[in-house]
Image 1: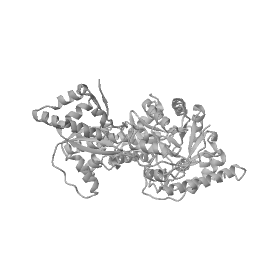
Image 2: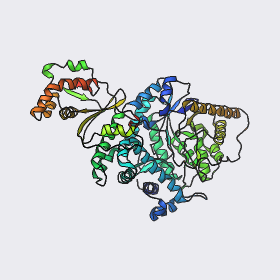
Image 3: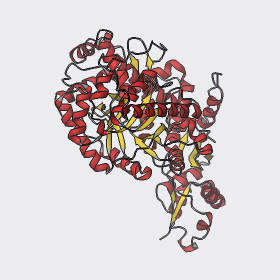
Image 4: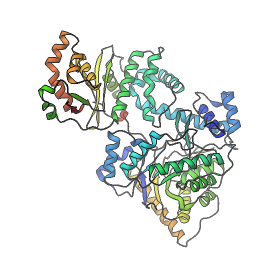
Length: 313
Length: 271
């Protein structure tokens, strides 16, 4: 059993000063593991200060579990060191691949949904969970392409990997919405079909609709459509640790925490439905009207804390 | 692993690292049509192109952030040309973007087309040193009294352990000052400096980054210590002339005191 932590937010560099000075009430923070897999200096100093006051969970972006090469042992060892430091109740990364032939592309590239990919991903996921000695979860990604070779739906693929490897799911409701729009599937079928008992954590985030497709920019508030999918998820799966991701045009901490409270209210509404209230509708979610046209980028985790931002003496 | 899935991924990785539009490259266009499904709004080539654009945007942005001094010297056109050449020739091979620019000095050393090649090389090496020092392992500084407590008869054989967050750079231009001017100038033009060789110690102290010019003799002495030489051998290596020997004799005590106070030394090992 993993603990249910409530509603948290991503720990991001622009908020460090306010968090450490004001210590606002936050159920938990999520960190991008790779930003803290370093020897020392400011990143670990700030992490340790946060750990003195808050629960922290780890989320990775560079594992590339389904890539052509086996997972990097040195990377996994560094990850495990960080796990010991944070005492995270679980570790997550993505259903994706990140590179090939020795090149790391630093992106969450979609997997062809085939049985060969199920086998590869499941074998490695089981090995990684055993190695890390904490529950391991994989997250469904937003995607912008599909493969001709796919023979399974995304939710069938996810379910099969999770069951075979006996791992958890990090269910990103915004990613469901984005990919549903981009590929024309039914978001609610996805929500209904994933194995709910395996969901360890939920992600919520803003997105940017470019008209022909939606980009998972992690910018702005969570859309009302995504919140409705979230209520439906909670109604089906029960109370699950939920996190707001906001990585582009990062607002003041107070705005981010208000967004977490908005998610908490939606969560309560989802739980009320679970308690005998109305069931999720079966109508297809309708994407909002296109927003900005200038956003064509996405990133995970916001700005990396780096030497470039230092006042060098 | 050579199988259908891996071959697809390798082909896709080649497409994403391509420097121009996929639509204009027949082989990559054919790859997209063969493997990517597309839909009634976005064609297979356009779907793949979304990821290719992202590859270039993400890596270019990371280099821009990590090498502001280099970008400031080069200007937009040369910077873009350098970055494109770099990303084509040196695939990112680390899980972290922190390491992305590790091969830049080597490429710059070969890029004779650069307007200020030697200056660019110095700047890239300096900025790489900042990146490395920023999050290098922590090591508590040596307490100055421990240095004073080394018995006289073991002093020559003692080895000072230089902290992991220290880098030593010999440069031909005053690049640390130039970088500060470039960062403070926003879009105002900054004059390219004349050559003025410097020996720099880049280090981290109380979480901040510092660069400190030292004399050539002090630099040689500190480099020898960093390479693991005992104090006596390091001093011998540094005394390359009567003047150097005189400087060493007059300053070694003060250097050791200053370097210890500044956290450059993390331990002392005596036989």
